[in-house]
Length: 383
Image (cartoon, rainbow, N blue to C red; front, side, top):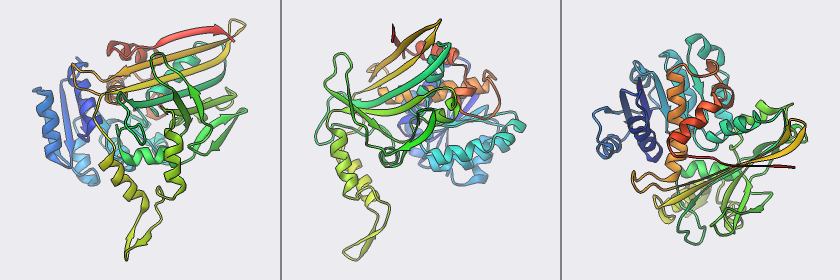
């Protein structure tokens, strides 16, 4: 099969690596970026004759259509606001498409293309990174273990191995995506109904073995389409982001001061958007590309064989020295690659523009993660 990767940043690099070195069915990979030197750098680092590079402006619909033709699937590793038009281009060219997502409203617009995608005989699957992404399929995987599922609680975080003040955090993906997660509302299920709660709230403590004190708090986007999928099925569903203890209070102070606002202000006779300034300062002052961890925890409560049980999935992934891939690259880009290949092979549960938890065979997906040494540590007890 032939796969197109749009965007040659961290996640594009991770996706291309997986397609080249973990995916024997992939015969060719095109990596495209507005900055051709970035695509060339990825090709040089991975050093495979299967890789072809292209220069592309993803906002140029005509050129995107031309580039997509002839590919079995495309993976978008560019900013989320391009994903609706990219989905339309995929339908026009009969190319299976998935992306890293990150915005609920964009996903809603993509899912509205379901009839067109079905007619084209392809999959459009948004939100296929880590969270939203991998955890949505894991949520379905765990829910299927019960005769009746009552609660699903998801906790995920990317953490530096050597945290530095003041935020004890490093940039591991788009700063725009990070700010979105922190300022937009989170969708949950409470008491069997879909509800919205403010991000950076409902702080809780949690622990992983061999890690210092950790916290988790509400953030936007992590549940993706899960509230709609599980509405009427479960009573409680939520997603929280994991950070080192103290991060939430420090970043929330920036939000409360208005530094995440997109409303223009005038400073020295120049109009500026505080959010853009903060984003630039975060990029300048926070570390990036240093060794990291990704922590994942899903907890399920339900009834199995007449007994109320609690099931926990834990995953701890870390920077891979052998491949020079961060844990965030592995747990974000690898799932997107897996899903793109499943769609290209026709291994999805259905065609159309659909949530991944419905379209993807959870058992096959988990097996593919394990083949990449992303393993679930599972525990179960009576509740």
